[in-house]
Image 1 (cartoon, helix red, strand yellow):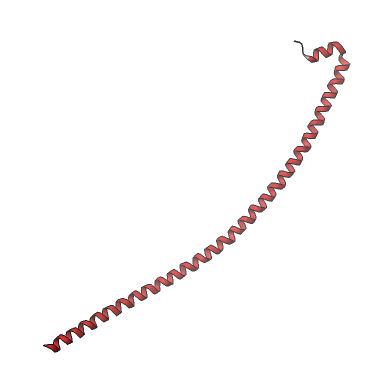
Image 2 (cartoon, one colour):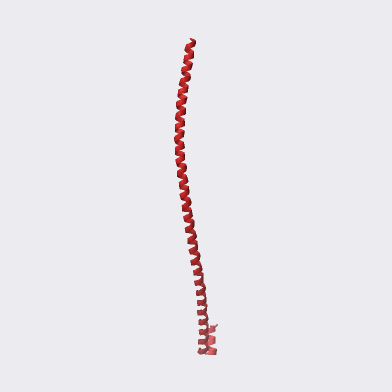
Length: 119
């Protein structure tokens, strides 16, 4: 099997083949330019999309930063509240123990006085 190029070269001669090659090459160049324009358009669109996504991510990060600051502030408030509440619990437990000890000793003294009075 002979190649198409050789068949055309033998039948029509080198001038016809040269013209045919010029048409093929010019068609390919036109298609390459068209594809490159499409690719430039796609690249531009992707660049715009990436820029928009980057801005969205930055806005989200800023929002998360603000939320984190609020959460930290609330955590500090809760921690302070719990520490103060813990102090109150300690104080209440101390007063309860003091009352309980005094009441116990008071009741023991009354029982002792009453038992001594019966004798």
